[in-house]
Image (cartoon, rainbow, N blue to C red; front, side):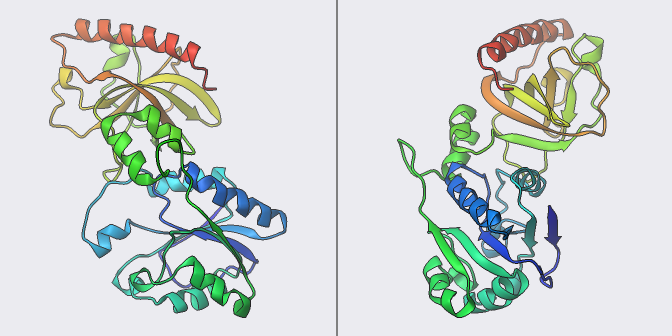
Length: 311
C-alpha cells in the first residue's frame, strides 16, 4: 500500500475507485463500502482511501478528542484490506477552506484520477461540508466517473456508528464494541522493555505504550489476542499503571501475558486485540498476592480461550 501524506500536491496515474471519510473506528457499517470497492478493483480500478491526518474536530472546534483508530492502526487495517493508496490529507485552516467544487475538480478528478467513488450517504466534504453524494452525482456525467451511495447499516438496536462504539469502549463493554467493529478493538505498536518484574515471578509479559490520542477502555484485565508476524496467540492483557509497584503516577501501559510464550520480541511490531473485560486493576499488598491473582487470571483466561476459540 502506498501512503501519500504531508502534501496536497500528488497525482495517481492509474484509474481509481475512491472512498472518503474519517474512518475512526472501522466498523461493519463500512463493510458495504469496501465490498463495493472490490467490484471496481476487479474491473481494474485501484482502491483509494482518502482521509485526514488528524481529527477534524481538532482544527474546527479545538477539541482534543481521543480516537478509536490511530493513524498507524488505520494503515495496518487498510493494508490488510487490500487498499492500494491511502491518502492522509493535511487538515488545516487552508485545506479546510477548499470549496466542494474545487475538491471534486482538483483532487478527486485530477489528483486521484477517480473513475468511481463509493461513499456513505451522510458523507460531507469541502468548505463547511457543502459537498454531498448528490453533488458528486450531479457532476458525474461531466467528469466521467461513477457514484455509488451506501446507506448506513443498522443492527437490532440502532445505527452502527463510531459514536456507539466509543460509548461501549469508554464503559469497558468490549464485547458490544466488537460486535460493531470490523476488527476487534486493538492496539498496534512496538514491544518496549518494561520493568521485567514478570519474569521474576514466572509470568513474563510484553509491553506496549499506547499513543496519547488513543481512546483507552477502563483500567483492568481483559481477555485478548496477540497477532505477531501472522501468528495469533491467546493472551490476557492489563491496561493500567501497575499500582502494586507504585506506578499510579506513570503513563498508562498495555501489558500482556501470552500463554506458554517466552520469546524475546523487543522491538517487534504487533497488535493486541481485546475481547472481554475481566476485572478492574487492583493494588495488592505484596508481590505474592499479585502473583496469586495473576495465576487465577491466567487459569480463567485459558479456560475462556478454550471455550471461545479465536484463532
